[in-house]
Image 1 (cartoon, rainbow over the protein chains, first blue to last red):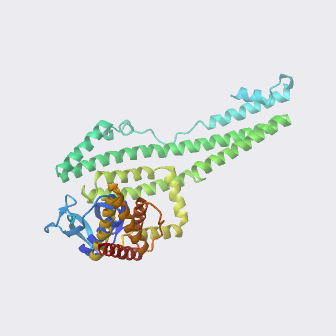
Image 2: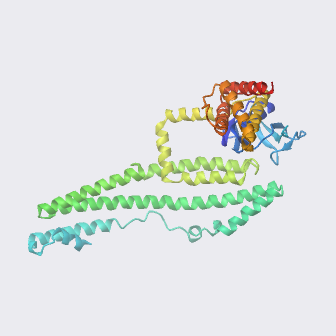
Image 3: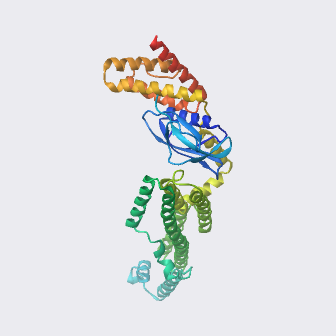
Length: 95
Length: 338
C-alpha cells in the first residue's frame, strides 16, 4: 500500500530489491524514496499509488555499473546485512 | 452592570427599603471587587521590540514561493548541494516562525485560562455571597441556581476543551513532544541529502512539529501515555504489519507474473470487445476459484478483476495467500495455453 513503511535491515542487496519489487507489483504502488533511518535503525521505503506496468528493482553498490535506469539521482544509504551501505537503486526494463 | 444586576435582584420599587438598600450596597461591593481582581493578569516581562517583531524571520508568501521555485530549479539542474542549502533555509525560517508563535501561544494559554478560571471563581463567589445578603427567598433561589450553573459550565468547559488537565500538564506535554520531534527533525536536516529527505518530506515533519504544540495533540499524547502497555502492544503490532515481508528473487519473479497476468486481463476488459471480455472473465474465475477466493460467479468481468486486485494486495504480506495466488495464476495460464 502507498505510504512509508519499514523494510528489514538484514537483507542482501538482491533480497532487498526482490522485497521492494514484490511489494510494488502486488500492492499497485511505486517506490519513490528509500533511506536508512539511523534514529530507528531501520530502512524506510515510501511508495505512491501506481497502476502502470513496472520493471523489477535492482540494487547495486554505489559506483557499480547500473543495470537499467537509475531511480534516484544520487546514491542512497540503506542497511544491507545490518550495515549502512551506500547503494544505487535502478529500474530494470519491462521485459 | 452592577446596577442592572441590582435592578434584577429587586425589580420592584415597592420592595425598596433600608434593609434591601444595605443589600444593594453589599451586592455592589461584592461584584465590583470580583471584577477588580479578575483584571490583573501580567505574567511575562515585555518582550524586546526586535524580538517581538521578528523581522529576521519575516517570510512573506512571495519570498517563500521564490525560494521553493529556486529549490526545484536546483533539483532540476542536479545541483543537490545548493538544493540542500535552499531546503534548509526554507525549513529553518518556517521553524523559527512556528517557535515564535508557539511561545506567544503558551503565554496566552496560561493567562487566558487562569483569567477565565479566576473570573469564574469570582462570579461564583459573588453570586453565592449575594444570595446571602438579599432578603427575598425567590431571589436567593435564583442567585444560588445561577452560581450552580456557573460551576457546571466551568467544569463542562474544562472537561470538553482541556479534559480537566492542568495548564502545566498540557504545556509540559507540548514542550516534550516538540523537543523530541525537533531533535529528530534537525538530525534529518543535518544528515540527509535532498534525495532521501526532500523539501516535501521536511514539510511533513514541519506540520507534525507545528501540531505537537497544540492542545488536542497534548491531550492525545497524555491519553496515549496513560494507555501504557496497550500503546506498546499496538505499536509492536503496527510495526509487524507495516514491515514488508522479505522476498527472494523467485518471489519477485512470481509477483511480476501475477501482475503481468492482471495487466493483460485488465487490457482485455478495457478493450470493450465482448469476446475478449468473456475470455478475461473465464480466466479470472479460474484464478479466483483455484486460489480459493470467494467470488460471485455471475459478476461482470470488471468485478472479477477487482476481486483479483484485492487478492493481490492481500497476498503482499501473507505468504500463504501469495503461494496460493501464484499457483492459481500459473495453473490458469497453463490451462489456457493448452
